[in-house]
Image (cartoon, rainbow, N blue to C red; front, side):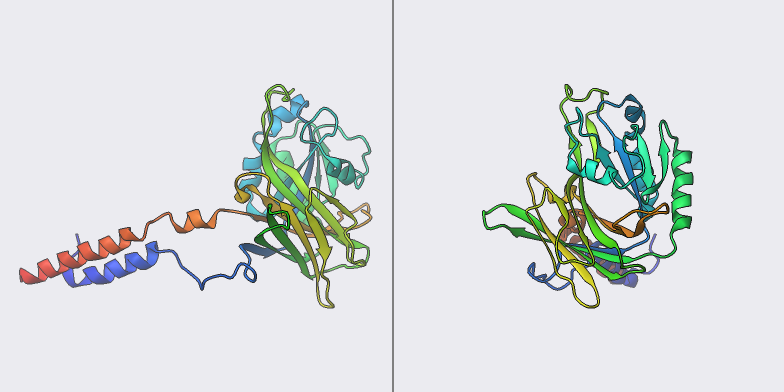
Length: 307
């Protein structure tokens, strides 16, 4: 029970401030990004998996929750086999060429390009590998990711992704790599191991050495270019959206060695999941707090008139 009726309008204003979304100035889409993030300490876990792999069927379903529970400490990237797997693509072959094992078993896991573990792993096994990878990082390169919605010259919806390296602990013989991930569903007849829902599947990829102004490898992109300056390095890629919601995407930016060594090859990484900000800002309709103010104010006036 509220003891002081005069405090009701104040309480109503407080509720309004809490429940009403914080609006910034109107954004110009040509200048302000739709989404952005900055970081560098995330560990990259690349997993070789396959829709025909029975062991993967016991592990892959709980991996997304395991990774989500560890927040920004880790990002999972699923490398699907290119043999009898509809989710496989050339990125798998390209990324596997960076590790020591030429013909890996499924499932296999690499943390920051090193520390391979194979087979029916437990969550405890992955936690130990994550801790080991974190302790192996000497320092973290800082990357920022920004996205902009747009339309291509052929009238297709696109998303422009800018990944900028602003602080690097090692530049020689290193590159920026960008992964575009989404969850995918396959037909039951394609799911040889019985799993139809797959997470963190690569749908776009690009990489560029810091010593050059060209994209050295790309997959699934509409366009790509480099816009490097003296103080930083920026990769700009455009991805054509061929599905209903762009907030199904996760963007991963990585600064890594071009030629992996015996030690961990990733120098810094961060990720950005494109959430529907309009949904987040409209969870509480504006009429609700305004109506609450009117009701509480009326109660306050009524209480004062009874004195």
